[in-house]
Figure 1: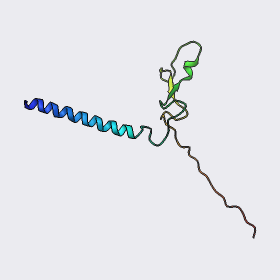
Figure 2: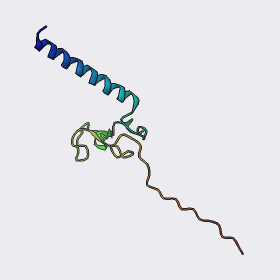
Figure 3: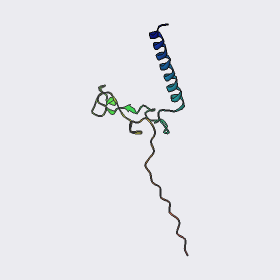
Figure 4: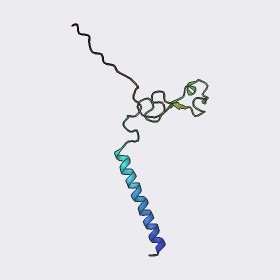
Length: 97
């Protein structure tokens, strides 16, 4: 075999090995991370825009930039659930002395 064929074969095998490695990592970890998919948009981050619900059939406004899809208000467009910023305070009951 010529050196060019060997080089191309080695490059192809390297690409296949890299693709297999990426696929194995993707199968183990979800892209969403520790948060579940948003139930409102099913993880896409986009929902139907209000302008697409008008009766004239025309879609497009500033919110959706003419696409008919706007950012999900439940997840903020991330597609995943997000923790609520809440602070809990625990008070001890007053005990009469």
